[in-house]
Image 1: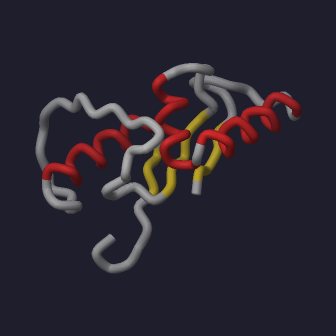
Image 2: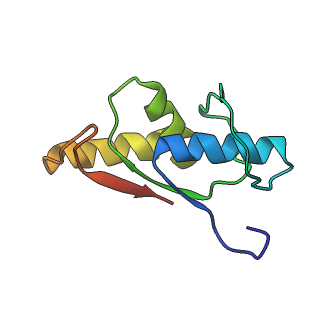
Length: 100
């Protein structure tokens, strides 16, 4: 990110992990171990993540809130409506989406 490159999370767990670490270190990623209790929901200002590769999550879940924080609620609703219309598979072994 310091060199002007984008940071793309692969999965919501890596997104939460990177955001936790970056928020502790002024936007930088440093090696550490520990726990996170970060809750990402609409209105959250992302410190590090610019985009996310993730699957289609259960409706009304905290993970839908996370992806809505990044893409906007209306964009996620539209994506889910299209996915349903095209019979995409949902949840852990389903289809994925790239949120930019």
